[in-house]
Image (cartoon, rainbow, N blue to C red; front, side):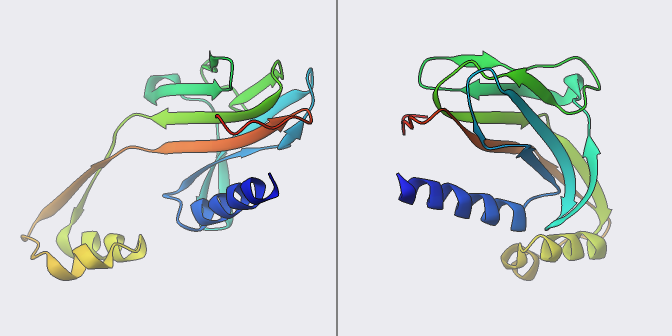
Length: 157
């Protein structure tokens, strides 16, 4: 069990270091039934949190709490801040999954190469012969956060 928490903590650190500008953080990761589970969505540059984002319904594909017993839809009202604030109604592990809709960017080739290198995608930036003009990218974000309710832990989440 300690190894699982260590692994989850390490994954969180790796996720934050290489995050593509958004992170999902819980106010508390260890909760009890009937506690309030508060989740925040931040824009960040590595470990430097720049601002908090409200819930954006129109660009949210899925916002769910996955436990051993069920999947709960966490969709909020537009502009809710924090993005989630609800009573804990489960025991064990809970995985919060936030899936955002596609984002698109378009940059001139030199700026696009800088962007790839900044996001540590050097292999592509060095090997691809980019055409002159605008380069486009379409991507989506899949944010995850683990929380624990009660003293029992299950690893089926």
